[in-house]
Length: 105
Image 1 (cartoon, rainbow, N blue to C red):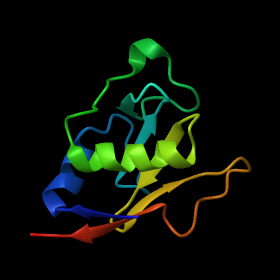
Image 2 (cartoon, helix red, strand yellow; image 1 turned 180 degrees about the horizontal axis):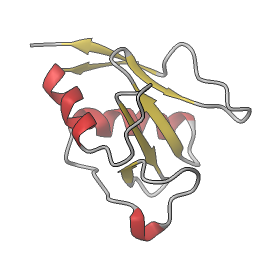
Image 3 (cartoon, one colour; image 1 turned 90 degrees about the vertical axis):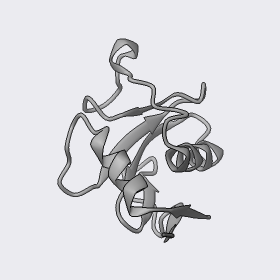
Image 4 (cartoon, helix red, strand yellow; image 1 turned 60 degrees about the horizontal axis):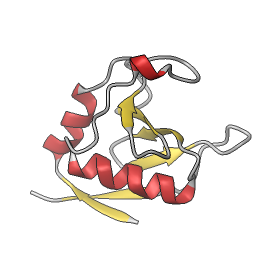
């Protein structure tokens, strides 16, 4: 799946980060109830620490929607300048990315 995105939108995804990870532009989680939040802990995030960012960034909503199609139980996904990835049950990164970015002006 290809998602059109601007550099500013990618920057917005980065600005919402609470736990900065040098290897990724941004890391988010999504749950089956459609909530999306930036990573704040390692492992499972308590409900009271989840800052829902759905409906703030349309490109992020599209990424999370595609992720939940592939993994209905939800989980964490990882974003870099090329696209978005997730880890499978044995912690192997999804390659190629499950979403590719197409940059627009």
